[in-house]
Structure formats: C-alpha cells, structure tokens
Length: 161
Image (cartoon, rainbow, N blue to C red; front, side, top):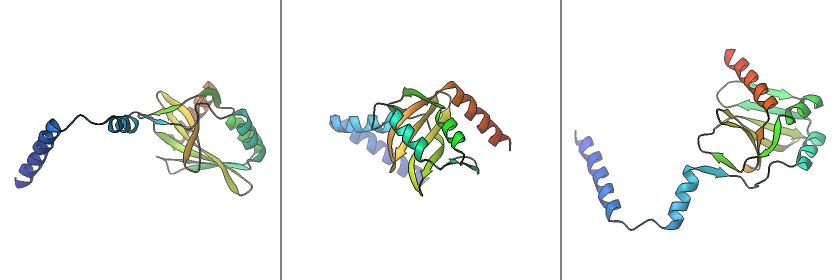
C-alpha cells in the first residue's frame, strides 16, 4: 500500500512540476520528434547502381540472419547473389517509420571482409531494405513486387518449419 502511495505521489509531483515548467525549447521538441517518428537515412537517394555493381563484382557470399527465428542462410553462387539484388526497387526511402522493424540482416561479404550490410524490413507497409556500413544507415530502397513475393514465400517456409 505504501508503494502505491509513493508511486501516486511521484506521478502527482511530476504533473505539478510539468504544469509550472516553461514551454519546452525547440531543440527538445525536435529531439523528441526525431526519437518518436522516424529514423533518417544519411542519403536521400537509394543505393546507387555503382554500389550495386561493386557488390556484384566483389561479393563472394551473402549471409542472412533472422531476428525472430533460429535460422540463418548463406548464398555463395554469383547468380543467386545477383538475383537477390534484383529484388531491390529503384524507389528510395528517406526515413524509416517507427512502426517498421527489421526481420533480419543480410551481410554482403567479399575478400574476407564485410562490404555492406542490409536490414530487411518485411511487414505490412514496410517492404524495404536499409543498407548499412559501420552501423550507419546509408541508403534505403523499397522492394519490388518480385522481392515481396520471394521474401513472403521464404518467411512462410521458415515459420512452417
């Protein structure tokens, strides 16, 4: 019972203080909006054809890890890697909506190092990939219809097993 009074007192004190406090500064409002709305990508353009070409030329294998499933996959055939990259639309995204969460991460490897990584977003209204280098979100591209069909089948198979 004392615990409830302490919690209630804390809430009331917070409400009282906030009612007497000054209007929040613009910087505070802006930070709150950034934290609660979307994550900005560094580039307003999607991944470029030049970068895709470098990935195709340099990538020896792609590893894919899923966040909610104890499954990982690897592709090491050049045609599979190229096919995988064709699922990316040329339509860029510039922000990641807060309701969108990645279902997995793809790691494009070549010459013993990570070339680039991509978070895979796949849920209602969130069908895109965000390309990452050194944990910085650089580019975002929507998936094309072929990509949506491919990942829908893949995730369905994973869920069934």
